Image (cartoon, rainbow, N blue to C red; front, side):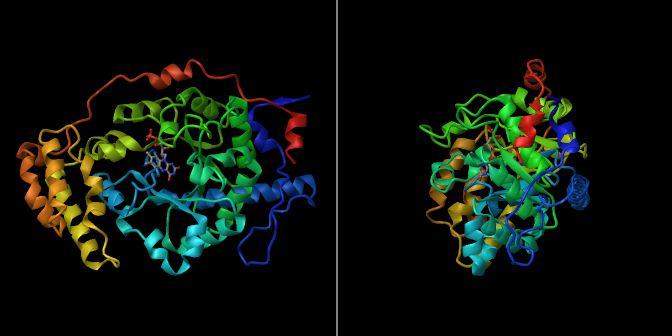
Length: 431
Ligand SMILES: Cc1cc2nc3c(=O)[nH]c(=O)nc-3n(C[C@H](O)[C@H](O)[C@H](O)COP(=O)(O)O)c2cc1C
């Protein structure tokens, strides 16, 4: 019996992997390794990895994804992403999850789901699904839109997604399918691919089970980047919202993955609310940090610091008044040109956290609510409401990020689970 740790193992073993082949042009990549000799299998696998390394380099025209804004359904739409991009030039943006079926069945209407403004780069498309053919087709249809990475959702616990349809986080229980899905995604795009997952599902919540998932997916597909929402999902009895707060965060699992899979890239996610925490997570070794709710509900104070405090750019001089002016030009142009005409409430929704904890915020939000009944443009809505906010708030650029001393990640690193280990028999039973 040999014992081998995580990724060292993945580089010394041969992936034995077979994907259903269909005569659909590029739909499925020919990865049927089973009839090859051991050395040819390894060569084939390394070629696949090489392909991925080359495609990873495509992304280097953008700043590294040290900071990203999480995919959030009904929140990270074009309107929010436009606002986020006005505030931060460097954060990586994620789309809401789009089901592969939606892309395939809405073939004639794709702009509605996939189009985005060029200023939104770097931007990642997240897709979800449980049917390889739809996943392949969806990726192929999305490819011309020029997303910078395609991410596959293995973390959503919503019963609509993880229930009958059996995708999202439930797929963590079927790593072979995830590897196949990642293989067809990579075969149908020329940009890097990644997986977003949790640290476990229900009782499948040991560190070794998480490693098995990462090991199987990374060794049987070109996936080299994993985004880890560092809490498990409970599939029965609690809502998606509760699933984002009740299962405890276990950052120690995340940092143990960095130790056990040194060739892979890991982005930490879950419960990170300030730039200080972002920087501490990076200092402790995370390759990237993904922030969701805090970036949505408090965009100015979170995103306003990203370019300077995370990427080292000079402190931005843009003020909130100037951000609103730019957003107004965008919003009114969408109202004028987009068919069907979106409603004003949808476009202004991302602004509701813009004055988070500033003087005048409560009054301003009540005025916006009232103005939405009468105004037909963003310009008129802002004119009618903005005097609730003091000029000093509107005309100040972001100040330096407050210095704090969060130590949550260094604490987690003191309680890492034992290194991942698998037996030779177990590894070969994966075939
Ligand atoms: C309203 C809402 C919708 C979400 N939708 C998605 C989604 O479409 N895909 C996904 O992978 N995660 C989704 N998430 C989870 C977030 O991406 C993120 O993993 C989670 O909120 C934890 O990060 P945070 O603590 O920084 O918010 C959603 C979260 C929220 C609050």
